[in-house]
Length: 277
Length: 326
Image 1: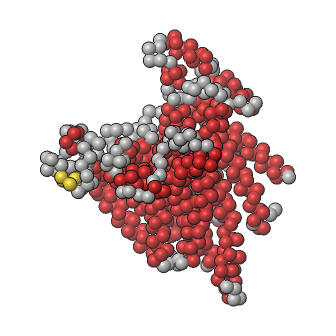
Image 2 (image 1 turned 30 degrees about the vertical axis):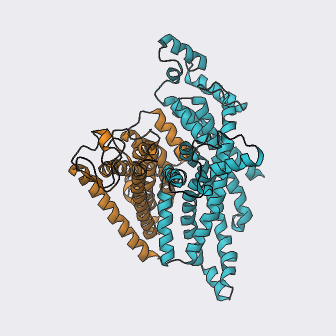
């Protein structure tokens, strides 16, 4: 339909390739590491070894080492596991909650719809970052909590999309036909309406993965997300912050991985929304 | 007029809902603010006294009624940790964030629209693809990372690599603590301190606006009325200004209204990295200290800004878009 499609599709294929490579590296690299990427060894001899050099014990470091002498690349790949998993799960669960709320609100109508939409409007009126900070700071931090918080603060957009779609789809003749044939309410919603109302929600969930990864890293940067010694790109940047003069790579390298990942997620989401348009 | 009143009423109901939800969210959280206020050597009785003094021992609905009653009178309560009126703390922090936010918002739209329309006019070319990948990457950058990268370059790097004096920029605070300058020199000092934070916020914001503008402008360039305008021999520049930009304006105004509060909230990380005493830092510090009144006050202001900005957007739209005039 649009004239950009070939380039967009090519770009999306490139983005997918990068993401797959990242997932493979995230699984394989920490497994092959000669030392435990969480353990702290001889700090004074090993700390802040520059990228592309060997330490005194002969280990070569692609991206150098951090303040505790741990290999930065291995830790970055270990962090990739957490960031990708949390980002993906956070966006998926938020999307699923949004689909449930949106579908039920549109289907039930009346007071249920009014209350659901009022709560969603109220939550949308607080900037997501503020909501996220309040929720994250008050409950004990950790990966599971971050996913729950991303779900709690991210369902509203999808709920509105799905509600609008369901309201549109339910007027189609095939829905009326299903009712006329005696299908139960739940079956009509589940089998006939929802499958035809999910397109925009799937695009929103895909685009949401990138922002979920960014939000997770932000929380971890502030110390409210993934807790050390488990690495996340956000807490690695926070660790590197103090050494930004002496060893800028410790803060800058995890950020580059984050940018590459989020860019790929966005390009994929763009391609998907183009295909749907 | 009736429509305006209705909208205002809706906005007030929404604000009340937001405030109530925030209140419930804060009180539903585990953790006792009084425990953080008393010294570590305090006994359980001391903590209980502190709770009683703050009114935290009362039933939830009494606490809520007190807070809401105060809010109606314009009283946001007193900070648990700093023993000062919340309004006073917010009054000091808000201008810092607003200054930072508004100046970067203006630059964001200026650069974003310029880049986006330039891309749309050259769509499909290598320049367009390169700019798309560039803006998508910058948009993907976390603000605190970009801030640190700028500090590494223009504060520490500048000294190491011998940059000219004008390009060596301060990384912390609003003004030089050692400076006794007044008047023009003091303003210049604040402006110098603002350069890196504003660049950080502008770069990320402008990348987002550019992506959005490019999509709108590209769609408009394919519209039938643009083809007609071209066919009747209008010069390309006139087509662009008269038909593309004017039609893109309503969407951009909606976006501006949506971006306004986002910029204020988005400065949280920038304020933390650059040590600016704005709303974001106040909010983060108060959350860590379980300083409920300050968190509530800040959240109320953020929500009021979002709702006001949306309302303003709704009211301005009919002025620029005749199709929206009822």
